[in-house]
Amino acid sequence: MSIQKTFTQFMIEQQRALPNATGDLTLLLVDIANACKRISHTVSRGAMTGMLGSAGTENVQGETQKKLDIITNDIMVDALEWTGHLSGMVSEEVDDFIAIPEQYPKGKYLALFDPLDGSSNIDVNLTVGTIFSILSGTEGVDATLEDFLQTGAEQVCAGFVLYGPSTMMILTTGQGVNGFTLDQDVGEFVLTHPNMTIPEDTKEFSINMSNHRFWETPVQRYIDECMQGEEGPRGINFNMRWVASMVAEVYRILTRGGIFIYSQDTRDTSKSGKLRLMYEANPMGYIVEQAGGQCSTGRERILEIVPDSIHQRVPVILGSKNEVERVVSYHLD
Ligand code: AHG
Ligand code: MN
Ligand code: MN
Image (cartoon, rainbow, N blue to C red):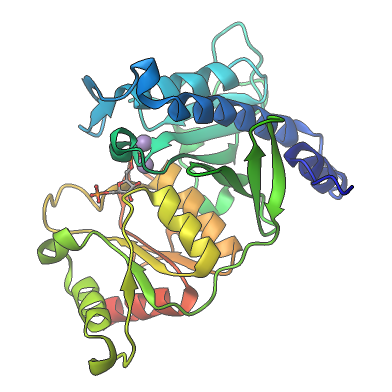
């Protein structure tokens, strides 16, 4: 009988291939995987635990928090603060960066996360997820705000966990993208999707069409051309999907290609897009690029943006290479 490779085994094998690896990253990722197993269990119990619905509070972005936004944030913080692998954390749900409590050792990494992505879907029982980004910190020293303000290109590792029909973890440490499925009976993630790649071409776009009138001209032009199908300048029919969970859209794109757009729009000119750079766009951008796709604001590569704050927003255009390049070229026109 062949036994599938577990996530821990996969990480240890990758670590052995690197001459200076200490195993710290492997241990950190196992802790993150364990936290996400707990989140998976919590969200799967749905209404039975009384945890659906709004918490009646707002986060730093002015968004109403779901009870599960707060619970999943607490699960991540509780699972990671004591481990000795981190010198600080950033969460979508916490205004300031999260310091490691005094009594615990300060490790060489920083973790940034969106504990529950797509949380508007939680009450309607659709796919949600957790997104995380790992940056280098300084061992033995409390992180400062400036330590987090690194470009996406400097990420050590990025991943997301999808709580859908099956629970999956998608991960890159800069050597391609691998997908693991949670075996719920055994409690282990097993390697089911090695070397995931995004087709360069696609006939499927993903955008919230209700915002059409607010988009910038290049995005309107691109989507309008797709919508004209065989009769239009593209000469092909396009399909559309919008789950309103970035984790689900990116997973679909990793599986069968596609383009995802959440661009800047004119609804609120004080905001540069909706998605957050440090714990949504950067980790997803790293994963998509590692799978052969592209990730841009339309004007620059997401992974090269020098952040000025931890909750900064950015326009995001990601997915199949040739389509992202086309949207970027429309921005240049
Ligand atoms: P979050 O639940 O972490 O706030 O993120 C939701 C994001 C993203 O996952 C999704 O692509 C987008 O918001 C959906 O936005 P609309 O509701 O505007 O379509
Ligand atoms: Mn999110
Ligand atoms: Mn969230």
